[in-house]
Image 1: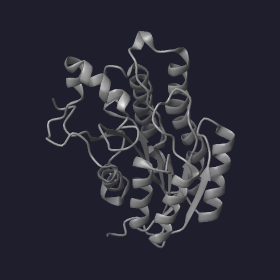
Image 2: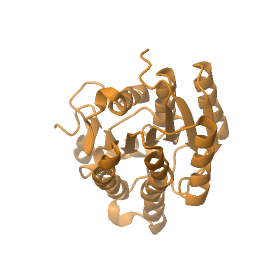
Image 3: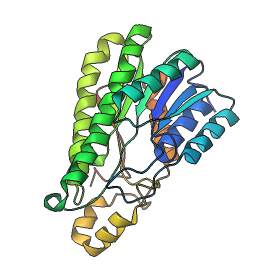
Length: 269
């Protein structure tokens, strides 16, 4: 595999499994050392099984198996002080910071007017505040370093359109999309690029949550909004990671302030 990230360090939140693990491993396979962070415990209001410290250990082993260094830490992105400490520690250990993937996020389901306040508040705290905290922890380091870099904020197809049963998730991901657009303008002067990532259905614990699939089956009219143009209904996280690696590499050096869409054709329908 090409070594597009040789000599660089990538930070990935939510790295214990799913898209985060796929992204962390992809960067390692292309020569990067990795700061891998994850909460590794359940989050209130979320139905699918939580990541664990064993999951994060598995990510670490995959990265080391590729001959790369890794600094892993269990941390909740909602805790700015703890997150900043973990990022600083990882940069001290690995020497620099070139790529940031703010991937950590959650999902739950319900009609917008039936959601509990806890569901809505937790969604915003994790997906919006957690992403913003990642920005606050990482960006000053990249600016001081003075060598540019790339940042990906993980949004969703729900970050550019409405989707049934996901009103709180859609609200959070629209916020992430807006932060990415603004941050790209603010950081261009430092040669730091920022894009928002917009995947659709990915074969991760979140994407395979039976809560949504059973709800869609009961309401085919609304469920049709989740259908893509391709015959494949869901994609492996490694395909998302490949797109992320491209846009954060030198091959994507003129991509900033834009949306990286990997959606099976959902937004084109």
